Length: 201
Image (cartoon, rainbow, N blue to C red; front, side, top):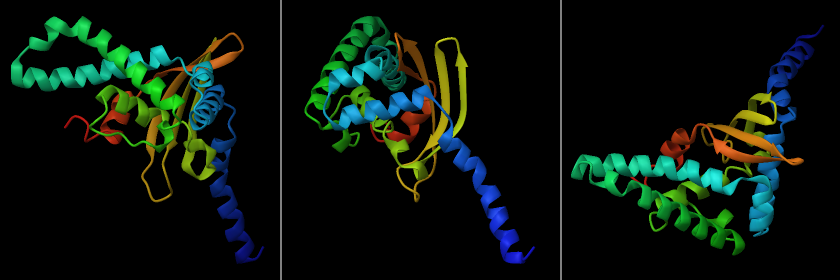
């Protein structure tokens, strides 16, 4: 066999893991892409069919509140603990209202996380904008898909472009009726650290 053919064969073999990752069947990945389409079309009702918004916002608010609480505790002691239940409830309500308004206006995919937004809303925007990344097969790698009953856990890497570093994304979805809905980002703390470094120093 000629050297050129050997090199070509080795290159093809080296690409197989990446190609396999892009071809893996994942209900969570399907839900991500459907949710991304809904965001681009400004259709909140359709988005909710593929994402458990209440569960995801609860996930986001818990982490954001924990980060805020840590910062406040450093400066003011445990003052925030006394109002935590009320503050969390208010943050969930405001985050959902702000997110729904931006989706229906078709503005979510145009936004980057900013300080003028609620930290929880900015984190949510940063997360859901990652859902559309797999539309470009160069910008995602499926690492692992595991199903237990009606629950699927997807581990993948995503990036905005070839020049950007990979970002780990671990997403859980659950089958409700005949559709899988995303209900949890298992590594949200990493997303927070990478996507929203400027929201809460």
